[in-house]
Amino acid sequence: PQHRHRVLHGAHHLGDHGKAVDSLREVTKRDPTDVEALELMGQFHAAAERWADVASNLEERIAIESDADKRRGLRRQLRELLRDRHGA
Image (spheres, rainbow, N blue to C red):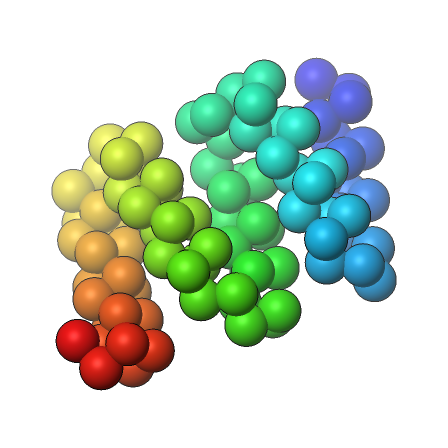
């Protein structure tokens, strides 16, 4: 809906990562399968170097992704993140 579009558009332009993530969380509360909002949230977490949040975000995206190839790609990203950030 229009509210979602405004939030997603506004989140792109917010300089405050925390406010952007809060706005995106509101979108995902209404629709936990909103891939665009989840992707943006992951980008904001990565830009803020909030690696645990990036990992959680990837796990959420893996859980809702129906395309097997995309799911594999997300799992690969998660493995690489955990390896690079936690020495796993």
